[in-house]
Image (cartoon, helix red, strand yellow):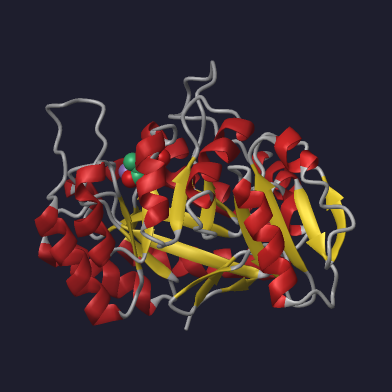
Amino acid sequence: MMIVMKEEATEEQIQAVVDRVESVGCLAHLSQGEVLTVIGAIGDRDRVAALGLEGAPGVDHLVPILKPYKLASSQFRKGERTVIDVDGRKVGGEHFALIAGPCTVESREQTLEVARVVADQGASMLRGGAYKPRTSPYSFQGLGAEGLRFLLEAKEQTGLPVVTELMDVRDVQDVAEVADVIQIGARNMQNYPLLSEAGRTGLPVLLKRGLSSTLEELLMAAEYVLKEGNESVMLCERGIRTFETAYRFTLDLLAIPALHELTHLPVIVDPSHAAGRRDWVKPMSLAAAAAGADGIIVEVHNEPEEAICDGPQAVPTDLFAEYAEQLRLVTEAAGKELSRV
Ligand code: PEP
Ligand code: MN
């Protein structure tokens, strides 16, 4: 249930409603906009209804949220879009973020070199995995804590905020010390304790859509993060499993307008893991920007032939300037501004 307070509602009246919602074991999620204050009462609807809050001091009206995801639903923000600010780089609304970097952190030199190039060419943030979810347990699993140190050094040298994956709740502190955005990978989209833990860090979370997940399941996963009082979730379409085998995954670009209707959260697209081939990465990036995506997360490598992981889909650093420029043009045509500082 959404409790919309009157414009002139006082702090005391707002607090009184919050207290009453909490007194019946529900979560009261306070959202203070420019003009209106809205309290999301999350929990058993009958118990909230039994409080008889209509007509309580300061309350304007009550709106039931019909979707199973509450905090993530468009209704909850009354059409206003969430804009996430990561150290001055904005994502959402009219702001488009270009997140670029290697699939995995392989060495100090590789990380610093790729970071330098993408920073020079106007990327908004640096991506790179220190902990890698690999299909085979015999594949390279990431440099772990050492990889995090290289990412930190890249951040210090370039000023780019770092997006890196958290795979295990036991690593949350180490990752949170370096990450500006915590990535939850496709394979962990429904790892609910991990989502809650990431939410509790207070850091923005980039949540990837599971390989076979519906948009509703993605939004329910986002709800786990939001429920921790963390309002900064960006959703990421990265390709889903279909019967098609001609490419790694089917990039579901319809998810962009569909999610924009269902949720206020920013929607970004990962063209790299769906394409699996670098010559398909640019067309899909431009298509995503044209369809209204709020950002792109793309893999870039200085020596793609030597890459330990996902080399064939990496944009080489020497082609990144042209890639970024074309993306900027389409982004602007779609009415958004590429976010950089
Ligand atoms: C990644 O971004 O490095 C990654 C492993 O992606 P996904 O979880 O979408 O497969
Ligand atoms: Mn990868």
